[in-house]
Image (cartoon, rainbow, N blue to C red; front, side):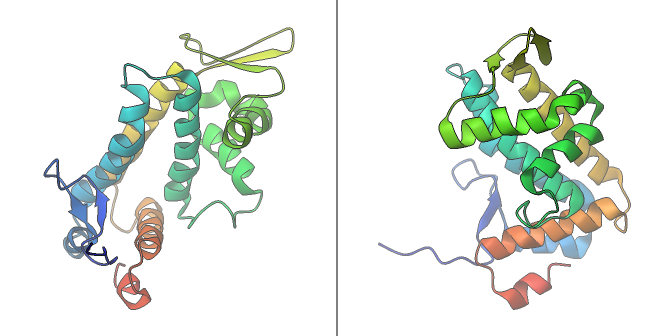
Length: 209
């Protein structure tokens, strides 16, 4: 069996089967042309096809799986927005990423007062034990968050719906922003980290400025 070697033809978004594969080589060309719209579309496609569409549009979707994917995306989107390689080296760690995300987006303002609890009992609970803890429950209602007699309820459907809107707003904003804007500096830094994680040699990563 031929072994796949990481390099310029590593796919960042899309797929060969679907005929829309976007490789590191394609991304390098986009950078050279400063094609903001296509790079923004690539970022959106990467998140949508790998995470949002399978989690939210699957007829067999379940609230816990939806929230697990959503929590993964929160950290990744914050990494793009802030230019982080990942959240492990960020002051305050992963929890800080959730607080930052909820503060940055008014769609999630109801979760701001309980950001630390959400991180501990939903994100970490599902990630480490495949369950929520601390009297947090998951539902599919139209209300993002509610608290009754100490029991916290979070809607997986509403969380996913709002997260999809945040992704669209982020990529639409990138497409319109100036190439020298901090949003682009951070996005390119994150994409260099992604290419590095794909196995692209360091000297080639440096060229992706």
